[in-house]
Length: 313
Ligand SMILES: Nc1nc2c(ncn2[C@@H]2O[C@H](COP(=O)(O)OP(=O)(O)O)[C@@H](O)[C@H]2O)c(=O)[nH]1
Ligand SMILES: [Mg+2]
Image (cartoon, rainbow, N blue to C red):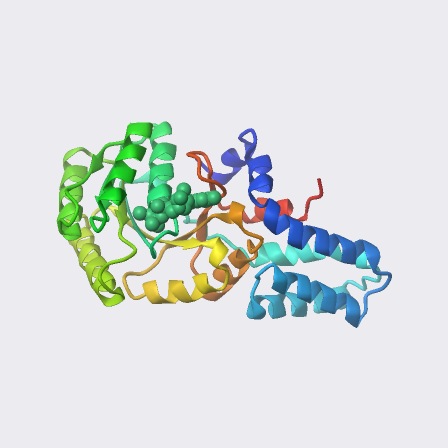
């Protein structure tokens, strides 16, 4: 399903706005008071906007780029009133969130999605939500419980499996995660699976151990399923703000990241982190989590995202 169709779905925008309510409270109300409350475009005006963007966790670098473009365009377009800058700022922010054309091509061919990230960011939940989404669209989906570090992780994925009727390949706690991946890949081939979703651990005995283990799984997928389209998604927790960016850099050594899933947007005023992630990591944000329920995972739509940040009640 393309973004446009998804956007037309009842409640998409309302759910997004609700999910972003904390971020909106900071960014939207702040900007609104500057655009409406200030009488001229001067240094104070720019400084206030800059401060709001920084508070919204857009990050220093992105904020500086946005401010520079804003100043240039205000001059070029001879804007005189702060209120005229609102649409301009929205346009500049949208340009920061470009999504490549091929972001969702994995939907049209047999694919494997390898889901990684530190503990507690929402990997298992995201795998469960994705499985339900694609199952509902009529795809043959399979999940792999390659987080064998804790029994709870296997149970959690099994629960999602029961809820959405998507089969899961799992072994016992303490099993070799690479063996689970091996089994899952074999099963996916035997069953003509459209989409194999692999959930992994975010913590092992130590970080090096984890990265080695993930690299091993990565190799097995590449070797055993070389014909399938491959996606490697890093899950990041939006509530961690700028820390998410440094976490991402650590995981980039495991395999080439093709997407980022930004979860818990509903629990934070730091939703502006999405701008930092897009511009600093150069990896597209493909989905955002806006709640804990099965439907609370949305395709990331830059246009709708910025509109939701700017639109008043
Ligand atoms: N509010 C909110 N909670 C989320 C979201 N995604 C995941 N969670 C919660 O975050 C917690 C950790 O999620 P989990 O999937 O177990 O993380 P994992 O350790 O990375 O597998 C759980 O309580 C989830 O319900 C989200 O988008 N919004
Ligand atoms: Mg998990």
